[in-house]
Amino acid sequence: ALAVGALAILLVERGQARKAASQEAAPARFEDLDALTPLFALGVGFFQCLSLWPGFSRAAATIMGGMLLGARRTVAAEYSFLAAVPIMVAATGYDFLKTGSQFTGDELTFLAVGFVVAFFSAWAAVKGFIALLGRLTLRPFAWYRLAIAALVLLVWNP
Image 1 (spheres, one colour):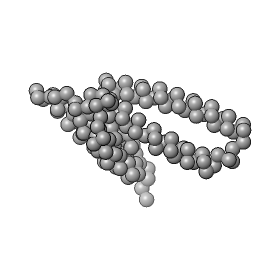
Image 2 (cartoon, helix red, strand yellow):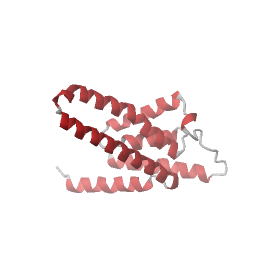
Image 3 (tube, rainbow, N blue to C red):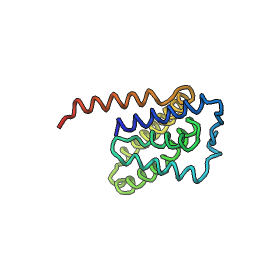
Image 4 (tube, rainbow, N blue to C red):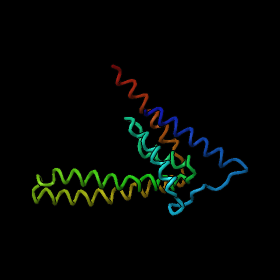
C-alpha cells in the first residue's frame, strides 16, 4: 500500500504538471473552499475509502482525490483536513463517553492541557503543510513512501 499510494501520488502530480504546462490550461474548477459542491465532497469521500487499506494514507487519498476532481492542491489539502475533524471529534467523544468516568480530576486536567497543546500543534502543522503545498508538490512525500516501502520489504521478510 505504501508503494501503490506513492505511485498514485506521482501519477496525479504528473497529470497536474502536464495540465499546467499545456497551453489550454484552465484554472482549477475549485479555487477555494466556498466553491466546493456536495458532489465534490461525495467524490472525495469515495477516495477516502482507499484509506481502509492498511498503509494507505487517508490524507494522501483525499488530497489526490480532490485534485483529480478539479481542486487546487491547497484547496484539496484544506478540505482533506477539514473533512477529518468531524470523524475525529466523534471518535474521541465516543471514547471519552465510554472511559471518561475512569479519569480522576488530576488526570482530566492533564487531558485538557494535552488537548489544548495537541490542538494548537496540529493547527500549526496543518497551516504550515498547506503553505508548503502552495510552493511544492507532493512528489517528495511519494519518494519518501517508496523508500519506506523498500525498507519494509527488506526488514520484514516472513
